[in-house]
Structures are given as C-alpha cells and as structure tokens.
Amino acid sequence: MAIEVCVKAAVGAPDILGDCPFSQRVLLTLEEKKIPYQMHLIDVSNKPKWFLEVNPEGKVPVVKLDDKWVSDSDVIVGLLEEKYPDPPLASNPEFSSVGSKIFSTFVTFLKSKDANDGSEQALLVELKALDDHLKSHGPYVCGQKVTAVDLSLAPKLYHLEVALGHFKKWSVPENLSCVREYMKLLFARESFEKTKAAKEHVIAGWAPKVNA
Image: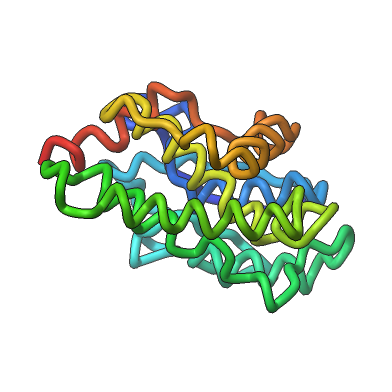
C-alpha cells in the first residue's frame, strides 16, 4: 500500500513539485528505499481544508504512517528507517551531524546585503569542514554508501548551488574539490533527479527572502 506524503507545491504552480528541501529529503528516503508513495502537493499559500484538519500546524512535509499523520523530516526519516529497514540508510552516529550548519550559514549569506559581514566566510568554513571530512571518509559522508545524512544534505546543497548562483553569482570554490564531486554524485542519483524542484521554482521560493 502506498504511503501518503504531503509536500510543498511550487510557488505559483500548485500542480508542480515545489522547492522545500525538507520535503525532498523525505521523498529521497522513500525513493532510495523503493517504498511506494502517493504524493499530495500542498500550496502553502492556500492550504486545503482537509490538510489543515489532519495537520493543524500546517507544515510540510507530513507523512501518513499507521493511520497517523507525522510531521518533521527528522522524525519521518527515523520512522521510515524503523519500519522499512531495507536497504539500511541509518548514518554512522559519529558522522550524523556532518554538514549540519551548512544550510543556516548559506541562508545567512544569501540574505546578506553587506559583503564584509563575515557571512560568506562562515559558509566557507562549513564547506571546508565538509571537504576535509569527505577527503578522509568519502565519497559519501559515511563512506561508500549513501545514508540519511547525505539525503538530508543533498537538497540543501542543491538550494545553495541554485540560489547563490542566481542571486550572488557565487559557486562552491574550485579548491573544495571533494564537495564539488560530492554534489555531482548526489545530484546524479536517480532518486534526486526524480524528486528535485526545477531551478526556477527554487529561485522563486527564495526571491521573497532575498528581497526582504
């Protein structure tokens, strides 16, 4: 039986998959585990009544597991791992927080209007730490196999590449070659191709935050 999953629809295009990295993380997990699912696209600016009834907080992603709607991508991914242990995607606990500050530092840099506020430097520090980790443990965060930590990072790195490329003409520096290779590897996965938002929808999703 297919699992029901609610994810963000694209801004201005309610029948197209949207740009939520947390929604994509859940879809990636379902794809990598080959779990059949039925996707509901939620227009977050005009949430349907049934959705708010089952999920009063109104946040995406949410998944229906054992007749209960569950929110929060961390919780959802953990439950999917328990319920569908094959193939295993659990990360080595020692490495589960690798890259965990990349998204917040990317967002700060993306919104920054001051070139000297240190936000670019802070992002580079985080990317350098990931590069060093991959150098000694790669190609994925936990070695040869893709795990939950990669599926969490992949959508965030995609947003970083698309949004910073568009709004700041910025890209991951050449000298961080392990990060660049890692991004290529993740973005080339079939699960990623199937679940990613189109670049224009990623840009449309970030535009209001950048122009705020």
